[in-house]
Amino acid sequence: MPFWVGYDELLLVATHATDSGLRPVIAHPERAEEILARPALAEELAEQGWILQVNASSLLGRHGLGSRELGWDLVERGLAGLVASDGHRQARPPHLDEAYDLARERLGEGADRLFDGTALALTAHHAAAGEEAGREAAL
Image (cartoon, rainbow, N blue to C red):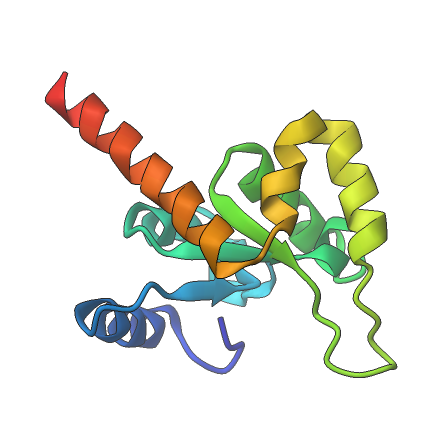
């Protein structure tokens, strides 16, 4: 989620992508000011079937306490579907190994799915979530 784009604009773009047959990945919602102020917005994004991607560096506290706490909350409640790097350049290394080790400590084997960013893993994870939601709706 770009820091200079508001939540309403994000919804418009992500909805357009969905309507075009794409599944948006919402990058680092735990770092966006609007979501930090109103964490329920992250739930709204996840309820749309959009993949929330938390930064590994956020889980390590490198973006402040608020981003760390919200990042772990999203991961532990199953709202985040992916943990990825924010390693845009050498001055900002990925920190994936450190975050993975912490996630394994906190989540056990459940952490593995968060660090497998292949398209197949994303599709399989969200297809299973959609099937589960469909079963719940049928009950």
